Image (cartoon, rainbow over all chains, first blue to last red; front, side, top):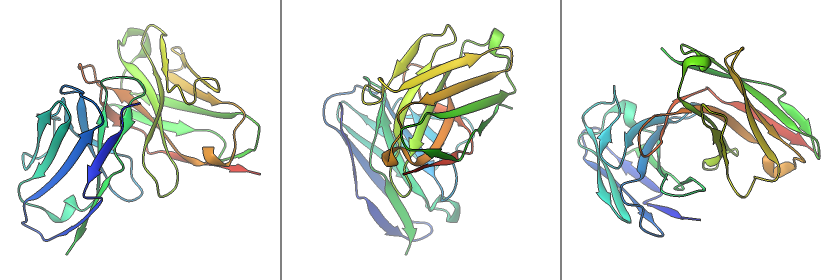
Length: 107
Length: 121
C-alpha cells in the first residue's frame, strides 16, 4: 500500500496568514493526488484534484502543487471558515489511501 | 444538484453483517456513467477507503476488506449498498457514501452526511 504522510499534523494560525500543508507519498504517484477539507461533524469536501486543479466552487485562495512524491496545499489568506482538518488522498493505485490529516486551529 | 443520503441500522452485533444503503437524488443511475463508493472514519481517526462500483457494475475493493465487503447497485431505486460481514469493534465508524468525479484522479466530489455505525460486543 502507498503510505501518505502529512505534516504538520497540527498547526495554529491567524486569520490572514498564509498556510502550507505538506503531503508525502511513500512511492511516486505522479499527480494522482486529491485534497479534502473536513469540518467537525461534517463530511469531507473536495478542494483540489489532480494535485493542482481547483474543484468547482472552491475559493481561489486554495491551491495545490507538486508531483511524484511531494505535494503541497496552500491557503493564501486564511479565513475563519477555513479552520478544519485537511486530508490528502492518493488514487494512483489500490488501495486508495488518505493521509493522517492536518488540523488547522485558530491562534 | 446531486444529493446522497446513507441509511441503515446504527447498531450491529459483533460477527453479524453491517448493511447500509445510499440513496442518490439529482441523477438517474440508469443513464449515469458515474462511479459510486464508500469511505469510513472511525471516531476521532482518519479516512479509510472501502471500495467503489462502476456504472457497469464492476467493483473495486480495499484488499484489507475484500473478503468481507460487497457493494451493489439498484438502478430502479437510484440506490447503492454496502454489506460488510463478520463485523467487530474495529468496524465501528462513520460510514460515508460518495460519488467519484469522472476525472483521471477519481476524487470523491459529492458525499453523504455520513452515518455512525457502532458494533456491539
